[in-house]
Image (cartoon, rainbow, N blue to C red; front, side):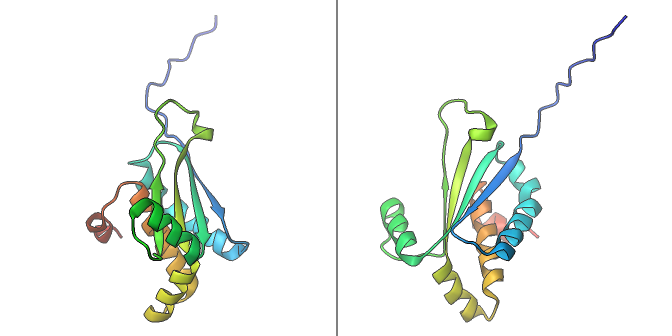
Length: 144
């Protein structure tokens, strides 16, 4: 006689995935994936499963986004956009948001801070991901 297993009624942990656009630099991509994987436990507390796009861009493009969506006619280093889904979407197709990072702004900031460009880009990735998950600057400052 076969017995049925009891259903596990614990909530399923949805998967978070990241897509990287705007760079062919494999070392940078690997570092971004590592940064993302490090942050997944924090992100999962506030985000459902789905995809996040990270786009490396230039000042012209990020200025246009900044002007169009935030009414600021200037370049910035990072912009995070949540993409709400008003109806159920399968996790694999759910786009949670996009993060745009200006390489030009990052280069300037890295030079001024005396750090490597890659390190500045990773700080901006972290900043964008945490904003996408709803963390305020004050909360971010308390994180390790």
